[in-house]
Length: 306
Ligand code: 3PG
Image (cartoon, rainbow, N blue to C red; front, side):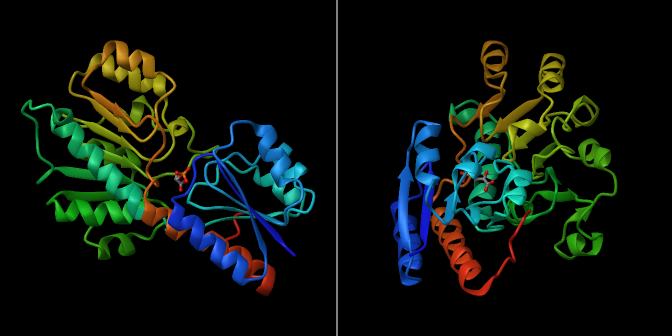
């Protein structure tokens, strides 16, 4: 009987676990659950005899993949797969997949929610500002970017997007202004929301050259990864411009410096929570379980990323 491990340091909602269990058991497989683990050893031991593994932001590095002696497939229930060592997976003939789009609405709602929270002075009672009529730039127009665009249009924002991988006419069909150069997105938009993955090309790519172009009252919104930000640039800009604000779904490395010097001009979630909704967990978790069954039963590798 095939064994499928769900290894989630940050567990799925119970409904999602029930849904995953039912998909796995219907296929005649066994579900093994490792939630809220506190040591890598627990993961290394749990993965040792399973055929498949579902993870969230849990790190599947070379050591973990090597420990999975029977492991054939790892599915990251979510979008970003920067937590999987793809080269090591390929070397071991393990298929790596993600579940694109399944948790995007949750992340998009958080991006807009944090924008409002910051604009309304952390709901402190102090006078703030509104989103209506303001320009929002989406740095990448993938699944999350599209949901953010839709919500922002409902708020009466003017939406721009830069994405070299999406044809301009596709972006413009959605009523979004496509921008040719990334620099122009930052010079045009008071709000910029990041939807790029973290990889060798994008790490520290959000730098002084881009951020310093942003108009007065600038707000950077990061529901992507902290690694894409050049924090030295961001701190320099914060020191130079009192009007600059930053909201992010995960604390930056330099959170102590932000706390010390820039109170009121930032908001960071204490733990990554963009995809932390029951709906997103159900969508991504069950999609991951189905992808595993389809892989074993039909050889389906549609969402393979390595
Ligand atoms: C993603 O890449 O899908 C999100 O960052 C969600 O990550 P999480 O599953 O760890 O909440």
